[in-house]
Image (cartoon, rainbow, N blue to C red):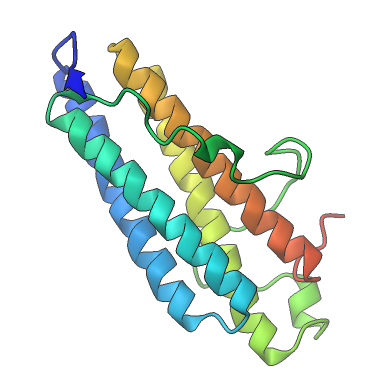
Length: 177
C-alpha cells in the first residue's frame, strides 16, 4: 500500500463516504439475510457476498485515509462465472417490500422459497442501486487511482447482481420473459 499520488478532492471524499455507507448497509443486509435464508446455497451466497462487501468497505476506507490499494480484490473478478453479460435482463424491483413477481405469487415456489425469493430480490435491487452509485462516483472522480479502484468494485457489485439473478432464475423464482 502506498499513498495516493494526488490528494482527494472534496467531491471524491464525499462520494467515497457515501459508498462506504452503502457498503456497510450491504454487509449488514447480507449477514442478516444469510441468517434468515432457508436454502443452504443461498445462505452461502449471501455469506460470500458479505465477505466481498467487507473487502470493498476496507478498500474505500483505505482510499479515504489516503492510501492507494494496489491489488484491490484481484482474483475475485473471476468469482462469478457463467451467465452472459450482466445487465442483459430487465427486472422492475424498486425496494424491499415491493410486490412479489408473478411466479412467486402463483405458488411456483413454496412458502419457504417465497421468503428466500424476497430476500434475494431485495439484494438484487440493492446491488442495482449500489452499482449505479458507483457509476456516478467513477465519473466524478478526478483521481485515476480512485477511479480504477471504484471501477473494480463496481464490476464485483455487478457480478453479485448476476449471481443473485441467476439464483432466482435457476430456482424458478424469477421468469426473465
